[in-house]
Image 1 (cartoon, chains in turn brown, cyan, yellow, blue):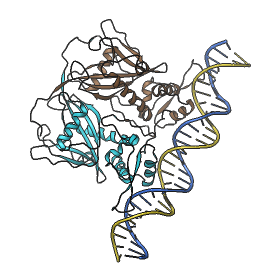
Image 2 (image 1 turned 90 degrees about the horizontal axis):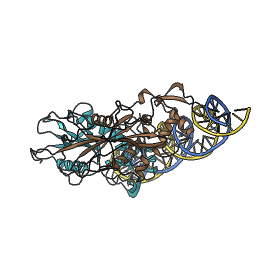
Image 3 (image 1 turned 180 degrees about the vertical axis):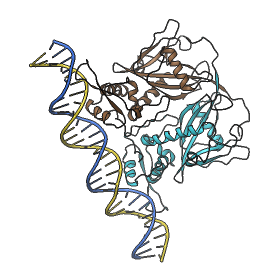
Image 4 (image 1 turned 45 degrees about the vertical axis):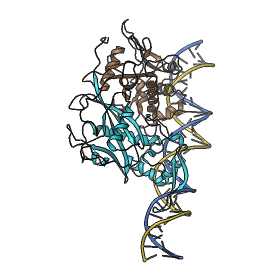
Length: 244
Length: 244
DNA sequence: ATAGTTATCGTCATGTTGACAATAAAGCTT
DNA sequence: AAGCTTTATTGTCAACATGACGATAACTAT
């Protein structure tokens, strides 16, 4: 039997965002450099406190916009999971709700001197231990990478890393970067274009690049993700599976 | 530029649990009946406030144990997602972290008169509108059902609904109940037994039931889920896909 | 033009799936 | 005990999907 009215404990709640993008065939993550203790000077995921009257996704979008200086967020933002509240922050119990943004490469405002500096970092540097993240952010990043990897298998969200219009090769580069594998261009092309309800031919072609011009595609309307939704937008059977 | 020290807003944080099981070929969910306002008398998901010094999964397990009178939770418990804090509770902003329990049918203590009464209800009754849940619990249940459905496609978690040892037919009944489809017994048998790293033959057989005795299986050690983990225990390719 | 590069189409052997026949091994009925 | 009913399990086969890789096509650079 629960005691009748013990005032419920209250916790500070933060949102953190794992913003991923593909740059030069490498998966990158957006990090800020902490200006205050604890972990002063260490890289950390962008994020901050949820304000009164805000919803989680709202807060995540706001924080990301504030810390990157971007007005309208590109890509697809969804909730990843919650961590804590026990033992995450030396200052006390803080619950954090992590989010995942999968976005095309976008420029980040290198903020002024007193603001936290946000920039893209190769994910590899963190995995290899060259860069150490504050708090439990390494664990959150790991979970985000897992999520991103599996999302590509069965959802159309690979395209969230691309611009509005993209070539099959650009889409393939996303898969290769996220999965860390190479994919056969011919089989990938067959699968991507052959999956019903995934891509839509724009009729346009690239020009000026090396090699034969490529057709430009966009996401089919029915495949476009609803922002925020824990999108189980299923491409059944899986679009393709990583090799190895 | 974030203001330097505005005391962060604090929120009450609850955990809710969507406990699912399969009873008589139907998917069931564990609900309590609310004894106090708001939504007094309405069915709701079991749950309660996170206490100081607790982690989320810990709190979810504790609440579930308290409200069902079960000592050791069967099945597999994992985090589902967080909701709020805006506008979920008429009394004020409350953040809730929902969890999903997939478990074999277990008896729930019909509590005394002043405790919240917990019991299994057919999921169908809620989907058909015969039963209305408190708060935003209908939405949470929907998300849980989606999650459970997709988990069965690529993870070994269907077995979390079964006892330690089970027959292929019992496992198939789980899939049929969760997906709401019928599956061909012969093809299911082939796939379940043929997937490497999924099942392990115990050598034992059923006896006494109607029809030919069936072999008893258990989950292969490598397929056993780690409790709590957002298990992406991948059975690649998918174990099987729902028909229709 | 020739070479280099990338895109796209095709082929083929192999593996997986869905539909469904056939057989096996129990309990139940008479 | 013989036959019927029920459920489990093994096979078969055609349709389809996949991975490996050959062959062309259509550009840019020299």
